[in-house]
Length: 385
Image (cartoon, rainbow, N blue to C red; front, side):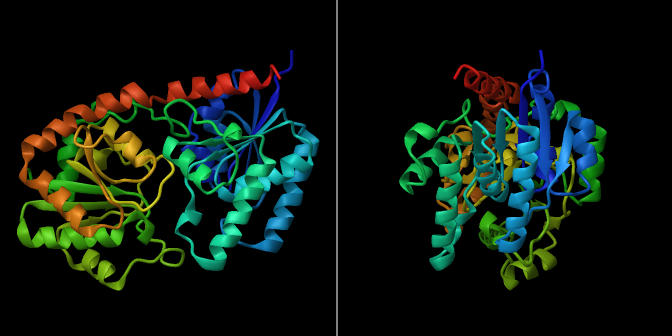
């Protein structure tokens, strides 16, 4: 018996490779899975790692009407040719183009996962346009999967779609977390010591780490400002920044850049494919983001036994239980961020208590196999209709 065909679509290949790592390979046991994404270096990795065919359709991440129309037509042709049982999209542009094209092509099951709403930070005419686009995406989909319960509430509050179209898979997250990979057991002590030496981290340092894009929306301006004040108060602290700047899309303030460049206790290491060693040399994840879907970084840090300081936004406030495996603060609040960081510097007992609970909470709630099985059940239920 031939397997039913599922097309998984993301705007750029790195999302198909990393955000959904392992998922397509798992689903291939039950369905014929095809990936659709823009051209890029990661495509060969996707083919090798997931064992699936990948069809290239150029898509942009910004508002580009002519390029978008061209991509829409290309997707329509792919769907008409392949005749999938399901088209399941991730990421905003792939979601909009994929859902419209799938509806026009007569695909019976059009699923879109929401992993965050960048438009929430937009203002004025741009926000109105993005609201319209969001509603069009949802109207073309047959099912919408917010990857957190908080995101589901935001979608309903903004009246993007009706309740019957919405469902959170499992406890949230788009792909769960590989708790065997993200484990301190995978990192040997000698390599940790070597990395500490390379980064000039002393044995008595309290190390805060941020992993992600170094942009305004991730709360980096507040983080750097709070750390600057902490540096004036404490000597044995470090801030490790793992990620890249996006100077054109979401630039940081000039003072923030200057502080990163001149503060000897701030260590910026750029993008890293394997973040585990950096978690292993750290004590606390500092993640003061303005908006998220269901942040992988917070799950990864928790699986590595780190407590987290996060903002009270959807996703973050579901993974972190306040004063159990981390501290929750209001977004865009430098003073509360400073206070939380200072507390975990000065109160080592509390820091260790939060750390003790971190890994168990992640293992109990967000193992990736749990998410995969729940999504598989969702797919299989569609076959009954």
